[in-house]
Length: 143
Image (cartoon, rainbow, N blue to C red):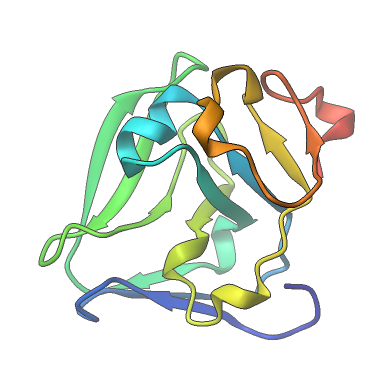
């Protein structure tokens, strides 16, 4: 997404919205089983932004599940339509992970890595070449 454009998005019904001035910290596709089950798909495209400058507005509910880190994976959904909007992982309290499909300009999302490809179903192979990690990348490789 880059640049200084404000990142905005909404749920399916439009009752819940969010915005962030950024900066975008990373853009990835996560193929872990948790993301597959939460989304009903082969993986979740997400981008990270700082939590301090992020705001969510509307009927948003937090759903907690135990993540791979042992901390809660917190998914924020619209109470009205059930859309997954963004994550606020307890393992990274300064971070928000925005689900790219909810972006107002989802075409601006350009992932640069795929995580947990060891758990990716064969039918969920990506059509674009990305750096792939079997699990989570080492901290100095994170983009």
